[in-house]
Image 1 (cartoon, rainbow, N blue to C red):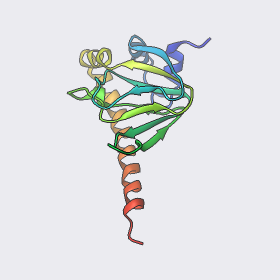
Image 2 (tube, helix red, strand yellow; image 1 turned 90 degrees about the vertical axis):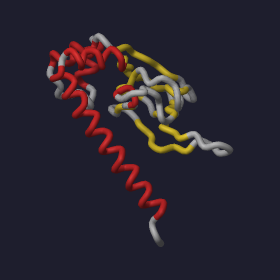
Image 3 (cartoon, rainbow, N blue to C red; image 1 turned 30 degrees about the vertical axis):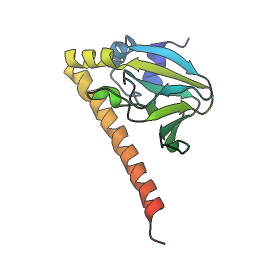
Image 4 (tube, helix red, strand yellow; image 1 turned 180 degrees about the horizontal axis):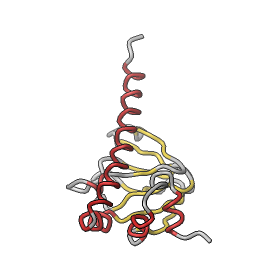
Length: 152
């Protein structure tokens, strides 16, 4: 049987997390679904959750006036979306749009921040995992910029 606890524990982002921490996180989690074209969030909106992607693809976009949105990255199954819930002012800096039917686990950012404040070991573990994701995404952006601006 699929339970939120098992789904969270098996997601690559949290795969080797202490089972006690997984249990704490389940209290902040819920299943969500989005249809193709639905926005998960938009720039400037309150960043109050993040997503563990289970199925489907999502485009992370920058709004560009008088242009179509610029896709910064495309995320899919097994990846994580969103870290703006971690730091004030808790607002999204980008847009996220489902490219196809999307299933995910949404974790409430305020709920998880409170649990991390109460349990610093959980907070440190969550922060380490997000720092790794942020570093990987910055490196991917760096490579994109090198590709775009490389002297040929």
